Image 1 (tube, rainbow, N blue to C red):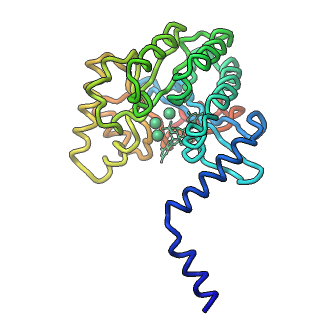
Image 2: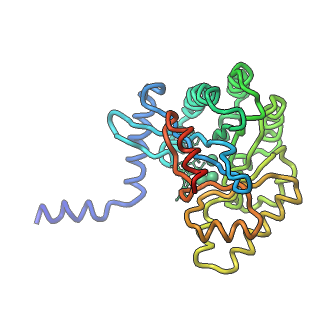
Image 3: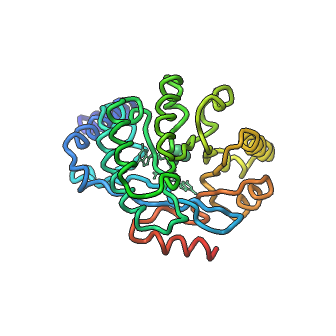
Amino acid sequence: AKAHRRGATVCFAPEHEVRQRRHAAVEQALRRADLEAEFTLVYQPIVDTAENRVEAYEALARWTSPTLGAVSPADFIPVAERAGLVQDLTRSLLRRALADLRGWPAGTGLSFNLSAQDIASPENLAALSGLIRTAGVAPERIILEVTETGLMRDLGDAREALLALKDLGVQIALDDFGTGYSSLSYIHRLPIDRIKIDRSFVTSLRDDATSADIVRSVVDLARNLRLRCVVEGVETAEEFRTLRAIGCRSMQGYLFHGPVPARLVPSAGEAVLRT
Ligand code: C2E
Ligand code: CA
Ligand code: CA
Ligand code: CA
C-alpha cells in the first residue's frame, strides 16, 4: 500500500511543481556554467530561393551541461533571461559567432539572436556594439534578430536601442513575427529591416487552406513596408512551392538544412545549392 501511495504521489505531482524544479536545476547549472566550454554555436542556413544561395547563417546556441546533459535553448534561454544571466552568455556567443563569420565568404551573412535584456542595459548594449565594431567584418553582413514579445515591454527604449545598433551598420530582424498580438500596430515604428515569419504559419499551411491567405497578407505587408521577409520552418517541398507562389523569397527550414557545427558551414551551403 505504501509503494502504491508513493506511486500515486508521483502521478499527481502538480505539473507546475515539476516545471519549477526543472527551472531551478537549470538556473543552478547556468550559474555554475563555464560559458566558453559548455556552450557552442550551430548554424542554420537562410536561403535566398530566387538566387539559390545561402544569404546568411543563423547562429543557434547549444548547451551540454556536465550535470544536466544537453539542454535545449528553448529551455535555458528563458531561464537565463529571468535569472539575469543572458547578457554574459550573449557576449560570449557573439564574440565566437563574429570570429566564425570572419572565415566565411563575403556574400554570406550572420544572423544572431538577441534577448530583450541584451539591449535593455546600456552597458551591455555598449559591450555588444564594441564587439561588432572591432570584429573586422563589414557590419552589413550582420543581422541581429529580436523578438517582438521582448520589444513590447518598452517600445520607446527598444526603439532607441535598435537605432543605436543600426548606427553600427547592422541589420535588424524581427523574429517570430505574427506570434504577438499587436504586431501590426507598432511594426512601422521600429527601425527594422526584415521580419521572420514564425514557423507556426508554415505549420498551419499543412491543414488549413485559409492560412495561405494569411501568409500572403503578411508577405504583402512586409513588401509595403519595404522589409525583407524570411519564412522559417519550411520542411516540405509542397510548403516551399506554396510559399514561392505567394511571393516568399528567403526561407529557412529542415527542407534546406538543419543547424550544423561551424566547421561544416561551407559544406552545408553546398548541400543547400544541390536541393
Ligand atoms: P528561433 O530563433 O525561432 O530559431 C528557430 C528554431 O527552430 C531553432 O530551434 C531551429 O533549430 C528550429 N528549426 C529550424 N528549422 C526548422 C524546421 O524546419 N522545423 C522545425 N520544427 N524547427 C526548425 P533551437 O535551436 O532549438 O532554438 C530555439 C529558440 O531558442 C530559438 O528560436 C531562439 O528563440 C532561442 N535561441 C537559440 N539560440 C539563441 C541564442 O544564442 N540567443 C538567444 N537569445 N536565443 C537563442
Ligand atoms: Ca531566431
Ligand atoms: Ca524565429
Ligand atoms: Ca521561435
